[in-house]
Image 1 (spheres, rainbow, N blue to C red):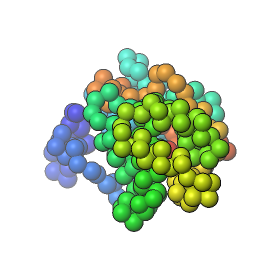
Image 2 (image 1 turned 120 degrees about the vertical axis):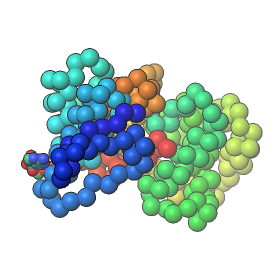
Image 3 (image 1 turned 180 degrees about the horizontal axis):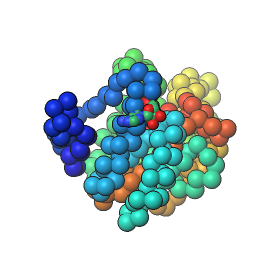
Length: 257
Ligand SMILES: Nc1ncnc2c1ncn2[C@@H]1O[C@H](COP(=O)(O)OP(=O)(O)O)[C@@H](O)[C@H]1O
Ligand SMILES: [Mg+2]
């Protein structure tokens, strides 16, 4: 990570954001039209000049387009990855359930559960044990088997028991495998009770063709760590459109953990 030149203070002294400053969170506060967005764009231009890798997640789309325009003219020596979830023309794959090569699957699952619960405004997993358990079972299968979003439908559809059995047999986490087998042995009504809250919440993502297409791509998908390490740039447009709802735009990043 590199420090960033911000401008000059009231005494004309250069003002820098140090590496230490940048490792903590930052809020940019001001009334409408006071220059917050331009300030962010200025910082992004600094990072582009410094060859600092970063990702921009833009919920409105304006900054995404400004940075894209700047990059098209001034950043010709690096990979700029465009993930435009707002428009159906984006073809790049992003599977947030892709397993990271290092570390335990259970830790990666934990992170995703915390992140999705947080995005769904659920303060802690103790209050919704059934939802947390079902998510743990689903996310473990997805990470271990390298599945994309569209396959989640099979994991929550009562009638897809055969597909699930096939996947469960291959699991390498014995406790999760045992839990899945117990779930599989339930009758339709009990199965519904157990899985309903996870199903209700995941359903919104599963019914979006835009997310299904992007999160279902097999093969090369985005590696956020690699982007940071190699000085690459990821620009993500999450602006609500005819193809992306506000809720799905916000929610899609919650799976990354
Ligand atoms: N440092 C600056 N110098 C001159 N004009 C600026 C500066 N920062 C912002 N502006 C202009 O002010 C207007 C509002 O800025 P913007 O960044 O969109 O505000 P905010 O995001 O806080 O609502 C824009 O037209 C922008 O070009
Ligand atoms: Mg703004």
